[in-house]
Length: 472
Image 1 (cartoon, rainbow, N blue to C red):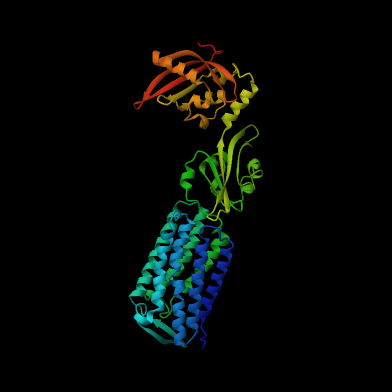
Image 2: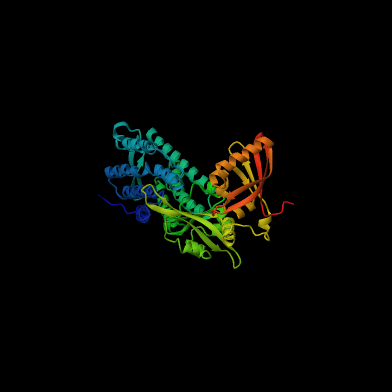
């Protein structure tokens, strides 16, 4: 084997080295969505660049043809691996069945079959000739219909993957957008070089610039991994749903870095959440030590916490911590969901202060009647006022959609007597009833009620005053 010294081969060897470095680094993050596909892409790039370097470096005809064929293990697979990476990384491919993942691999399999049997049909390369280019002997490959078919499906997969990740970038915060840009730069560098080659626009006519683009691609992927946390900070596909939630939601990765904070969490903390993405939870929420220190290493919890928002005000939250598991059932992160229960806790504290269950007549809460709106057909609560929460101890989310019987506030006999009188008089005024609070205390009320109709559906407005409050 005679070696032809040339700068192009050495540049390609360097690109191969960088790609192998990408493989080794990405392998440490193999559990992350998209990591395996990125490893596969880097492997394809390595094969392509290595054997193109060897093709340019030798002068033997048969070896040049052999190395040209081996390159197609990289050429035929890289675009499909790019599409797989974008689908896994953005979570757009969730729910795909196994055969959906396997069928596209028929394209590279057929391409490799045609390449390695080209001597029988010449559909890929109708002609194979060596041409002198200065001091080099280079192989020129004629392009047959199968070659253009391979180019066509490669571009389809490449464009499809780019569309997927561009759509994701439009709805992502800036840290994710920088990750996406780094991956797009990598794949664009490869295919821009290929486009220059097949259209004859290459400044060096005999040279396929595609593998040289892999140097840029490899550097872009390394830059994305180290600088922007590619494979570490993984975007969540359900951001739009989380943003619409009234509960505060925080998602952290397995290293404790914040991946997502929704708008409700931003309102609770009074922090600008976009600046917190990618930061360790302890650093970003240093003013919330009750959350960050106690639950720094807890994967599953449900409890109540008290957060001192300032010197004069404390808020109470119902906290749920749940693990995020990958397809191998490994913990890949955690979700923190906080729900404001301050009103309920204040009501419980108020009831605890008056252990006999009586209202403090000097307080505004004690003078404001309880107002409830029920759906007539099933007795379910659809609305309530603040006085109900403060006096009974039930949080809004606990009472909505429930009936008083389900809450245990009255008995079936009391309910039957109430409905009997309502059917008789069509309305109720100062009906005496004893109700059970959440803490078990029994309290007496004067109850008034009347029916209303909203959009052809009947509702019941229910007003209850404590019987020790003057009715005038």
